[in-house]
Image 1 (cartoon, rainbow, N blue to C red):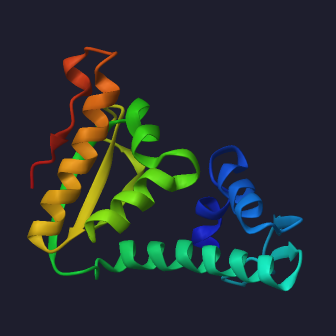
Image 2 (cartoon, one colour):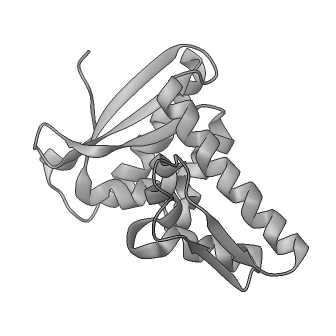
Length: 165
């Protein structure tokens, strides 16, 4: 889907490069545009059948994650939103998205990031959904990562805050 192209490519192409590297595919390339009126964009994969299948699975994971985030239908109805300074978001995402995927896998909650900055305060919203217990565990994991990153910064404005409802 066109709305997932940015997620597939990633910042400076990092996500698509990591997909290619992890899958063993020789080449993974997103079409520069979609056909007029089309809601999807082609992705070209070059490699053996196993690597092509690994790419397909990773792309499906990205698309399904985006759909879940948009629908809000993830493991129950509880939701926690945290305001995180933009400059610390990379700690939560991790290289190739590994840290955020690890939090999701470890806790069973679903952690995702907003695409937009919040209230022009250089913060992004991290949304955690799932059962209340799973959300609290995931919140703890996110805060733990941020606190490790803050150890060198010592700026109180960088502390995560629960977003008011």
